[in-house]
Image (cartoon, rainbow, N blue to C red; front, side, top):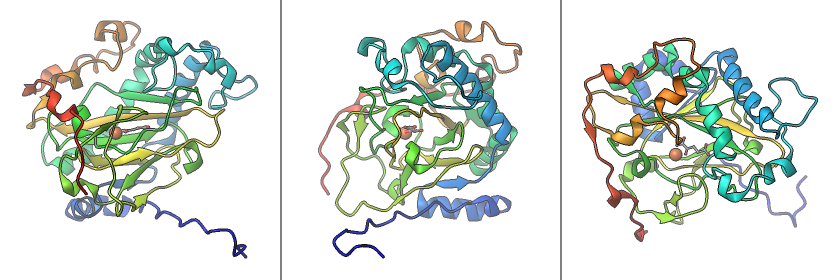
Length: 313
Ligand SMILES: O=C(O)CCC(=O)C(=O)O
Ligand SMILES: [Fe+2]
């Protein structure tokens, strides 16, 4: 029995698994229109996801931040060691040093996972057209480094631009319970179009100021293989990781129709390497510069979407 003096915290609603609707894309589109996101359990083979996790953790280990005595999938890190990364060498939007992030960006299997046939088929059906996978994958490696903050509530559109019909797919690289700081979604928030932003701590550096009634956050405990996907006006944020010794690994991947414009930076690496650098150690050639085969309308970045302005509730 809860003690009457202890206020009971209102539980947030949990994601609904949309897997049963994969047979009916009209129903899937209606759910996406209603909720602003779609969640799928075990959408990707667990082993494929865990292979990428192991590759990233091997990088973490090489950089001296992984605790000894774990198997290849253990994400326990040494907080003092990661806090030893000087502020100027840290990618605060990622969670580790820029040098380690470059090593992760060189990983062939990290770049291959977003092209899994399950994903390509899903977005082709959703868009009803050929799909462009943005090659600029963001590999979050969120640690308890003193300068790293949880991703604030934001829309992806000002950060990705091109077309508002771009969808983000968030792929946890391993089991990611809510206590590990997974992604949570403000239901129905995509209906308001582009919303004003303010500068903020955390990945992306911008936040949408929320109105008092915007409280319907959906959340869930992800397992490796689960995905959540949403169009670029949907407000989302990360929960705080409650164990500072656990690294949270995930990918942000973007998909759009090849018929829609794409902002030029979406075709560049998400780090200071060139594609040539990234491809240097790869075994296969099929994913090198694949987007150049598609007839794309490439549009420039527009600063106006990143200008802070007040939100009137
Ligand atoms: O993983 C995070 O903390 C942020 C992810 C995100 O904002 C995205 O995938 O668009
Ligand atoms: Fe985002």
